[in-house]
Length: 447
Image (cartoon, rainbow, N blue to C red; front, side):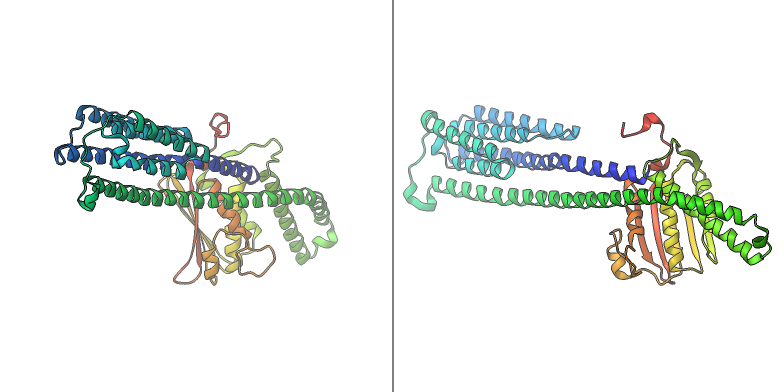
């Protein structure tokens, strides 16, 4: 689970999400079409019944109801396919619009052809194609609508309709045209608004994925820089360690208690630097053939806090273990560095006291790092998780929480921060236990 490798996998995952986003949007568009098709079925049923029984116009009810039944069956198939949660393709949208147009043509053929005022519903179907489909598909639907109109004009049987256009709104034909106008307008307004909402959600999702991709690239560049620096620092640190080891055997230095203590402190700090360098190389994927070791939650954090206290100068450190029954996990250097990063930030803000609380929330580990410092600035809280958000005023500061957020995101966790009423601040890191368990070779999701 190295940070460097995780940054790469995160970028690949974001790329995959971008590729599947169009499928998700098409699925939303298809659902809107299915809803509209149910409305169309009810509208056609109502229109057929009112026209036949109220206006006294003879219609072939059996054939028209058969056409409605076919449309209901076709729409029901789409409803079932949504429950399977399969991927939606653009050609399925095209097929649905073609079936709608053919069904409308069949109903118009049985009810007067182009003399039927509802012939203008072709316009709505072409408008839907223009909004949902690529230009070639939309032009193809327009061509199909034109062919259907010409066929109706030439082939559709006529029915006895009163020629009362001069009566204005008292004319049945004018009333039908008005209803068709209202229906077209209402459907366009409702449908276009819903499609625009879906597209806004799609654009917001893409913007979020692009931001995550940029952050992943940022981490990748920092990982490359840190890996190179770690390689360069390895030799001088080893030299310093050898020199300090020689100094500890020099009687002149060891006779002075102050010098002996300072040499021991220097050796401790050099050992810490070497550990950091090894951790950077391990996180960059250069494990030198080492594998993750199995440990447990309580053991991992007890060792971590013990090592952290030995290498940092803090007046008071309180570790509260409320995890309960222990769980086996993998000893991961990235998680260790992440927690140490949080503790270092707390120590810098509150040199006199730092607290760490370990607990369990269902199937997740909850870490709460507390301090008694001045707390977070409001601007930092609002931009939490973004790089270079810090009040320290030093170049390059503000990357600590940014890295913590990205590690948490990669592991499927969450990070939050708040100022405490009694003073100080609290940063909470919640990680699912499934992401911390030691994976077998066959369990690697990347395989």
